[in-house]
Amino acid sequence: MDLRSVSLDNRKITDYLLHIQTLTDSLTSIGDFVSQSERVDIILEGLPMEYESSVTFIYNKSKPMSVDDVESLLLDHQSLI
Image 1 (tube, rainbow, N blue to C red):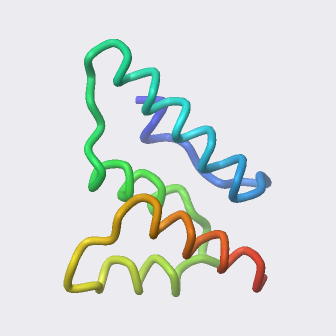
Image 2: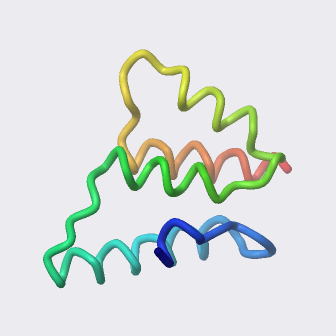
């Protein structure tokens, strides 16, 4: 439940992504695996409107992007805003 309620708010994108990583690692350690696609959805759902163009780009890809690729794209996006 905590994982689905995470949002960027006033954090840096690196802190946001690290927080999600920590939560998913904690869940995995107790046997509740979070798939790559679930993690991408969680990352994207917590982003504000400033990231809408990146979110749309990621969702419209014909092949799903990896978590690493999504994180790289969002880090690049943050440097532009």
